[in-house]
Image 1 (cartoon, rainbow, N blue to C red):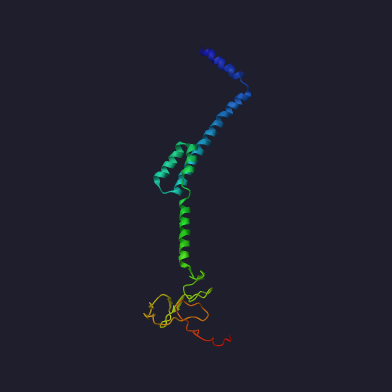
Image 2: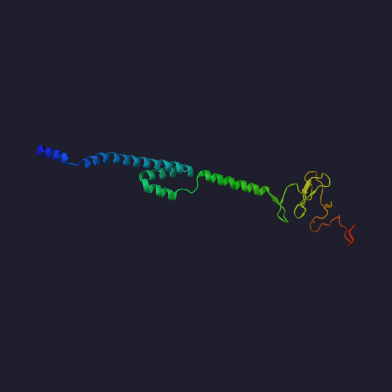
Amino acid sequence: MNFVYANLSTSLATTQPGWLTTLQNLVGPMVACMVAFLVVFWLSTVIWTFRDIRARTQDFLLQIISTVAVAIFPIAGVFVYMILRPRQTLAEIYERQLEEESLLAEMTERQTCSNCHARIESDFQACPSCGQKLKRSCPKCERLLELRWTFCPYCTTNLAGAPMPSMPGMANMPGVPNSNIPMGGPIPGNRF
């Protein structure tokens, strides 16, 4: 029986056309290349997932679960990971926080006029846009003071009794008379 089987297989091998033998010789390396490609692709998705989740969270357990899920379920795991992963990386979150802090610091530093909301500097006595009186100088030490202060914090002068100096042509604070403009009669040098 073995002899008949051996003769049959030999006769089949000799009767096989040449193109079929060539095809059989090519299929083996093609299958090996396809398997090698799939293994490399699988490893690259696992490595990419691990690197990506490490850039997006510091939670070690979540990093391990994501990587293992992609390793066990190669294609489906990648799609599920892409849907469930955090939107922003840690670097993007850090940059956004820096921008927010910078904008907040800029907003607190920037001073504006309470009347016209024009930008003013801390040493302005009046708004350059509308003339609103912003600060006054101390009659004794001549340092700039807030209008609402009743004592100079630098020389302890009582400002309650001191007249507030005003600038000609500028808007006055309500209830404070302007000492540069006479209360009655025509203004000197004015014909009307």
